[in-house]
Image 1 (cartoon, helix red, strand yellow):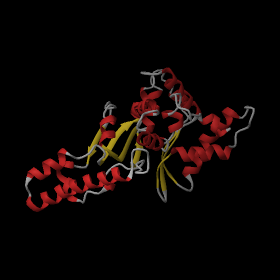
Image 2 (image 1 turned 60 degrees about the vertical axis):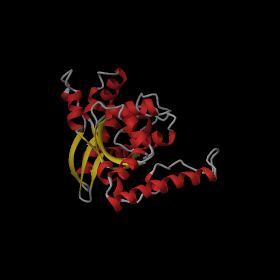
Image 3 (image 1 turned 90 degrees about the horizontal axis):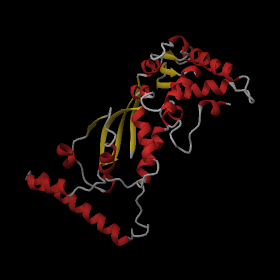
Image 4 (image 1 turned 120 degrees about the horizontal axis):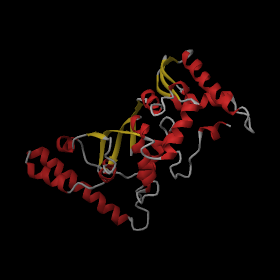
Amino acid sequence: MKFERTWTGNWENAMYGLRHPMESYAKSDSRFGIGDTDTWLDDESMEVAYQYFENWKDERVDPDIDNIQSKLIEEGCLQYGKYSCEYAFIGPNDMDLAQRMIKAGTPNDKFLRQIFVSVDITAPLYIWKELDTYKVGTTANSTSTMHKLASTPITLNCFEIGDYSPTKEGMNYEFHQEINHFIDRLELLRKKYLETKDIKYWKELIRWLPESWLQTRTWTANYAVLRNVVHWRKNHKLKYEWDSFIQWCKTLPYAEELIFYNNGYDEEYKLHDLLL
């Protein structure tokens, strides 16, 4: 599986909406914008870092202001270029409110539905079918099997083989040869269709295409959807595939503080705990 062209957005509006119920906008301490990588970015991140520092300076272990700033920059730089960066530096007041809403559960955590995610995922068809379970607030635009299936040779690498090994029990050499033979038959159907343009070959190719066929889709969702996926798929029988998805989730901004926070996941931690 591959995850490419990841984008997240609408952070400012999502966090602003978090303040609507109590109209507590004056307590917001986050910073959003597009900053110069050498000046504005440092100033904005340092301002938020000092807010964390002031909140925690009486703790048993004094926080390191440089460590706090580094963590904020690591988490909050959304789109990073040579000269400028789109950033979302979530302040301690806003993070505390966000996590309290997450603990309170649905519908209190609905601000997560307004943090948007878009990514190009290359995954086998059987994963796409399972991911369709989480349809609320998601959209997918896929490469076309109908139009492009016959355009490139069919080889073993066209299928999900990330955790496939012919040396495993039950996966002996003879079995692997049978798999290769089946793929050769699919490739023969593809070639016959290209030679004759007879739709019957294309139909048989579609009919016998395995579930492990890799397809790329641009998938859009939100942080609430990702929390559900992580919660319900972390111990799934398709360990390799869903572990790959969860590892990608961990690369997203504030993933541990929002997606994994209070989500029944073994590796959860709080921003506070990490920085002290």
